[in-house]
Image (tube, rainbow, N blue to C red; front, side):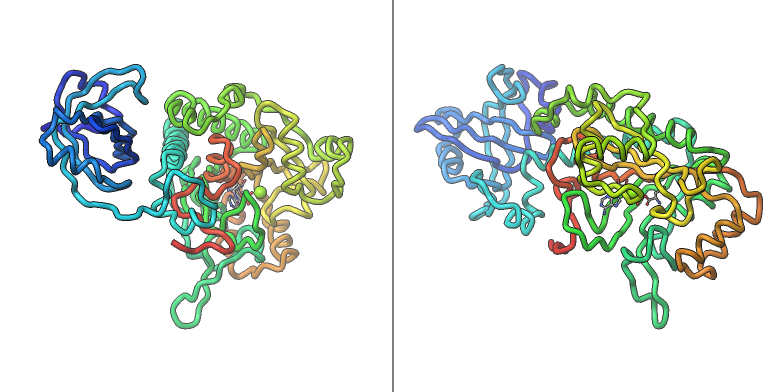
Length: 431
Ligand code: 4AD
Ligand code: MG
């Protein structure tokens, strides 16, 4: 019999096909079983009448438990009332393996209970919808850069020094007497790659020993980082706008089913078109103070500040020119306002906060060396990075976009922990 995946079932109306999956749930009346089967691509109701199958088959279905793996053969029927629009009238059922006492039942479970069973929780309809949106976002990101001629160039995960401040480094014993650190960002290597290839992107896992327990922080997350030679802050902002709007459009186009499962208000995503509003840090500070938020001018925007700001707009907002003193060592100061960095953070709307951080890089050798020292970073570890300013330095810039932050926003989730199959957080390393 033809093995068919549930998401393609509509192409087989009137035909006899086989579905291979797991029992999601079951309802029975004396003469008929309704089995909802899932196979990863979707959910399908299987109707098994007592008179349509051998007696043993009907009996077997009677005791079938949640998440038992099953193979069902039957005829595909169109049915407007059925979820997904199709049903299968069963002729045969094979039980591959019986699941006894599956721990995640349709009742409510606490989130810690679910996270302890994350390897099973990902089978839930909501969770599969989120992971499919994640998949779509990642593909949209890759397509966006590939179609524009960016070259994917990978950056190392074991690194000898910090990129984003020394307080969030994860040390790793590197053979006998060396300490490596898990990368916080591929940016510095990306800059070297851009000098070789023009426009590049890196896409991989990054690590931050964030001691904060917030709904936005993971200790392991995926970041896409484009970097462009011969680019200024405006080019970086334009690239960020283009990326975010094209990712959102792609998810709206291809993942309507999943967004519906997630009960996402898609009208809030349809407004995400370019250009995005831009706010100078000083304007952002003024908005916060006018709203009565106790914001310390000169400081970084905290989670609450970002939430308040991002609620003011119907699309992402680009905040620029943060005080250089609170930003990373590699940021180029604004020549017109040297205490400010030529940087941009993109804040997602609806209170989701920062999804992108980036800007123009410091391309002057002397000032870069001075900054490395001011930040008490070991200059020896940055010799190779300084080479980029010794040999053909050019204005350049780029940014990093956190995939999980994007998934959280686009799916309309409360917490970043559901956006990756196995979240890593301050108190979570299992499963
Ligand atoms: O703003 P960040 O720290 O910027 C950088 O790392 C730059 N070196 C990137 C670059 O210019 N190439 O991080 C970039 C993005 C954030 O905007 C956020 O989306 C995500 O990475 N991010 C996190 N996501 C989840 N958990 C965390 N702990 C994150 N920290 C940053
Ligand atoms: Mg940032």
